[in-house]
Amino acid sequence: MRGYQIVESSNVDWGGHGRGIPSYAVRMGFLDFLRMVKDDPDRLPRGGQFCVEGLSEVLSAFSEDESCVAAHEIKKILKQSAAHLERLLVQVQICVSGELILGESLRLTHNGRPLPIDIIFATVETRRLNDRTWYHAFFNLS
Image (cartoon, rainbow, N blue to C red; front, side, top):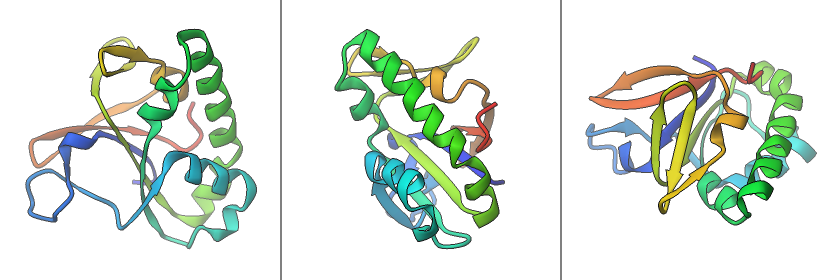
């Protein structure tokens, strides 16, 4: 299924041993991915699978108020690239450090601090694979 696979890094099977959610083939940092989809989305190969790491660290680099502003800006960039990502048939795995909790919205706690991941991924569906939970969000982020 196309879209974002949001998963705790601790639930990813980095070694391909079948004990978690398989890592997508191409690993990159979150800011590198954001730059690529904003400035040069044609560099993404058709049908590519990307494991994007570092969203937790990006959001936690800001104060609480600033992290909300940053989350809105991230969502804006991702929404603008949604149609292009759909056309390319890519799959994007967002691996986060910390704990994801789904209540009324998806919450992320990293180093004891709540981060506004729900601003970016407001609507998610819960999925399970190899007894591990992950969350799916469509590229349009609606």
